[in-house]
Image (tube, rainbow, N blue to C red):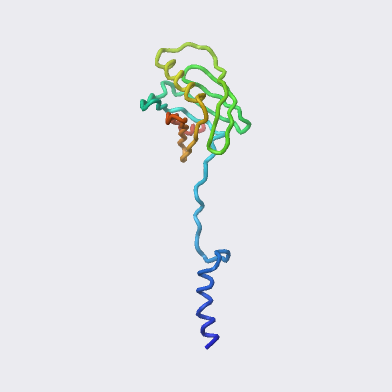
Length: 149
């Protein structure tokens, strides 16, 4: 009888154990934060104060390298800056830009994008090929992973 009870309890012991034994269950890794550095991002739009503006030029880009160098195009002018990335928080230093003049729509977008990048710490949320940078006021920069050429 003792042998029969022990045989009946073994499966229960395995099922109720610490989970260290291989139970044959498949664990699905939880999605963690996706990297934002080392990727070329195309700026699609910005949402400031509830109003969304679409990028007027396909050349509007952003890249943050792992060493903290950031560069891209604001819609008309090229820029570079230092960026600090800590987890899902990104802070940009002062932007250094070229000084070309473009049409009013492109310049207005550029000013809004530059302001959004530098008003404080941004929270990054990457989802597959999309990235959203959100500031403390809820304003957002919407980006898409640039396809390799």
